Length: 456
Image 1 (tube, rainbow, N blue to C red):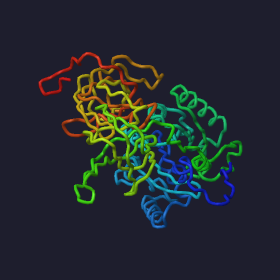
Image 2 (image 1 turned 90 degrees about the vertical axis):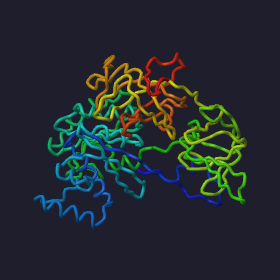
Image 3 (image 1 turned 60 degrees about the vertical axis):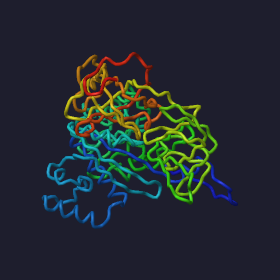
Image 4 (image 1 turned 180 degrees about the vertical axis):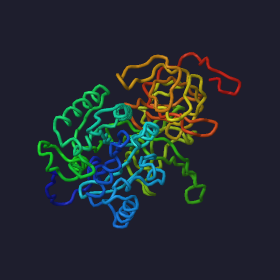
């Protein structure tokens, strides 16, 4: 596999295209997942070590810790298992983020836990990932936790999935073992709607097919893990998605130099905004025109996701934190009712009638869980009707009524403006991560009510 090459350029171009500007720096965000003892932390450590992304003092600390544990060779898993409890128990508990680079690409890696108790943490690690590496122990094959991680990756619409069949050295590098596991996982992932699976046979302990090709598996002609990470296409065209701009802060300098300045600061969630464009402020529905865009203190004519900018509008509208600015032609329809798929994260079950806070982009509103129509069965991907509640790590459909209208996109259209969190109003703990379907109508007022002002 070879890297794409670009011929020399002659002369000077006045201005690069928008696609060229946004793809100038190649960055891949990816997450690792797998069952307990599948070797995720060892794989990450091997990836960092063999790509020469480990500082000398870090490697020395790992070697010292390994000797203290009676190991003859460095335990590369210690490069990511940073918490004391993780080192003592030999498991990953929290999401460990690592940043490294090769000459071809920069990486942000999220090493997520494998223990079923911490499956919820994969939602955190994979929510912004462009690729997920799912590990399988070659001796055990596809297990329930493998299916759970595949379901989470599909639910979060991670566009690329790598199946790393680890510990091939313990099955004598047998091709039939790898082929059977790859076929089973690929079939399961396809039924979930995963668009692409790349299977790689590896041994993280010995380094086979992690960074360098394995001499012990000459029957495999595909890329190593690092080769695939370096070459997978992840550049998105920002013009392909409708623009969404959640307002974070209203800027009014109140100075003699800028007496009439009113700007709306935030990060563009998706798409492209241009000066002169007609926009609508949601949920109010009032319209105006973009008269200016300030980026790093300088005016620009165009800005795109995920840049942080300040917008200036032609009209003095009542706009505050939590409002969403979008092009009038592609603005979402605000609604107080939405259906969604959620991954429940809290130990306390989620039940119909639960009063929660719903956090969507920069807006937080009161909400009530009206129904839980179904729960996903990971065994056969069937929907269990009317489960009554969602326990920790359950994935299910919910119907939610909010106190105020929200401009929520379908998650299939936008990972940023189609996602939300359900929060406990009593202590602020996160209850569930949600992926919205299409918002449905405005039916009669909800029948769920109480005497604490939640009667919406």
